[in-house]
Amino acid sequence: MSIVQLLQTERSILPEKYKKMTDKEMKARITEIKTKLGNDLFIPGHHYQKDEVIQFADSSGDSLQLAQVSAKQSARMIVFCGVHFMAETADILTADYQRVILPDLRAGCSMADMANDLQTDEAWEALQGMFSDTILPLTYVNSTASIKAFVGRNGGATVTSSNAKKMVKWALDQKERLLFLPDQHLGRNTAYDLGIRLDEMAVWDPIQRKLVYEGDYQHIKVILWKGHCSVHENFTVENIKQIREKQPDMNIIVHPECSHEVVQKADYAGSTKYIIETIERAEAGSEWAIGTEMNLVNRLRKKNPDKNITSLNPYMCPCLTMNRIDLPHLLWVLEELVQGNICNEIKVEKSIANEAKIALDRMLRLS
View 1 (cartoon, helix red, strand yellow):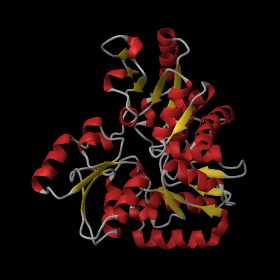
View 2 (tube, helix red, strand yellow):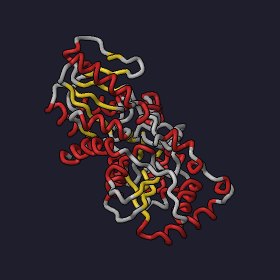
View 3 (cartoon, one colour):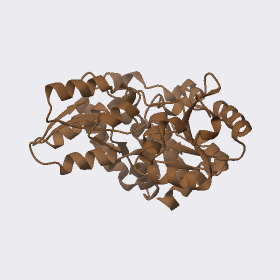
View 4 (cartoon, helix red, strand yellow):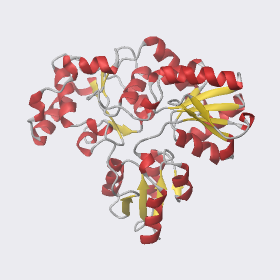
């Protein structure tokens, strides 16, 4: 069943009573349900979740890490506090008896939605016509199950922001070129760090259905899908300039989903895990401007009161789709579980799951 179909079903709509409850009432009830369900319930929470939600997480982390941790649980019910593609990955990796639930089906990812089946099939056919069998596809784990499956059946693998360099190097050892989905910025920043020049990178525009590149196509080593994270793309060179002018002693650390220009002007760049560990290890009194999702920045500020921490862009909003997971939706799906009802289950079609798992397994074997 598609997301649209699920959203059209009665049980995908939050009942009115939850909108009238106080935070105190909801927190007390969630705590009670967690105690009642015990080891039969596991709640993973992504780093970008609100504090009101993350406080109930049994484990917090990035998307792939949480899916892997979920697969190691004996719990039958996995209530995934993240976004849709993360819950899909959890369903792919968990056992058949485990049910993966997303508290709000509207919690999607704009980046993942920038590459769909039709677009990738069109692109692959066109690129094969241009370059023959010289391309290996890679996809960021921040992609839909169907895109992971596309990559799996075409000999490629998934990547994370932590292992992207290793996986890009592996791909270029297999074929002359790679197609990197769906985030052009992570692909560009990773390839550049490995010594690939910007003029050796092209961009596939799925809307215009064409390859954007000036020069001889035979010089292309990396084809970047024209996609991006709507949060990280909003950090700008101007943000960095303002920090440098007003607070010259401040360290600037950003996620590689930021644009190439921003990453090049920052002091440090790395995965969410890298950012967290760098801040935690930093000296007391050090100053940090962080270019990543605001909920995480705020949490790092609270956990590290001995450091001066701010967002690289102080006017940045939290990830809107990630923030759709809230106390009312979490309580609702938990109360339904107590009554024996499964709401908002994320179930990946078996054939897609099998091919997606091939892409995931290739990465896990290599990293």
